[in-house]
Amino acid sequence: MRIDRAAAPFVLLALIPSAALAWAGVWWGAAAALVLPIGIGLFFRDPDRSASQDPTLVLSPADGRVMYTGVADATDLPADPAGVGRDWQQITIFLSVMDVHINRTPVSGRVTHVAYQPGSFLPAYKPESGRNERSEIWFDHDGTPIVARQVVGILARRVVCRLTPGDQVKAGDRLGLMKFGSRMDVFVPTTATIAVRLGQTVRAAETVLARLLVTPVGQ
Image (cartoon, rainbow, N blue to C red; front, top):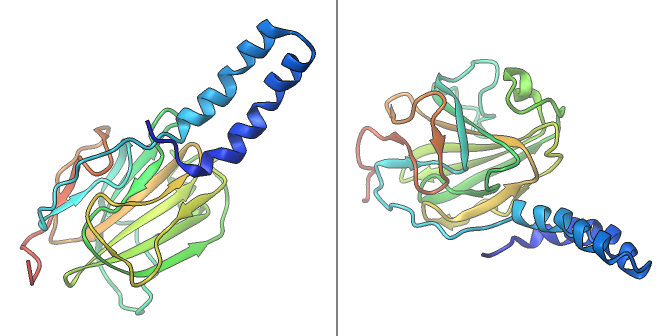
């Protein structure tokens, strides 16, 4: 299985106890200590996924459990770079440390805006974690705006977004990752039909989060 390159510094650091025990001749301890770097490496696992290219579908950008669906909180809306006031529906996904943390694009289209915002590091499963450090990625899906928001948690102290404005992407492409337990918000138009329920387990690039009202122009 592929391991994301972001794992390297964490795995190397976790190897130090095992290396020290091996140097001291404590071979059983060195072998036991390998559990830590192996576990950290598996956290950064990057499995292949097959994504539908149906333009009416909004796919999950993350593995995890749905912790909210419905009208977006008016106090925590995406920061619209055009200054346009929009009404949104929101799906929030909580990622535990056991979930795959590679994030993927929810739709095909063009990346129009990427914004990093510093903040707090509250547990990602709490509603007030909307104040946490985050990265927002805006997609133009043939005229339909879709937003994915990476939010850190109490353990996840950094989000990694590898997209830049102007990038052309396909649904299910890798967009980055969040290091350790965290949360992902997805914002869709109010005309979309939410296709997941509270508490449902979802898989990035495979689970349909919402269905758009019409096929985008040009598809």
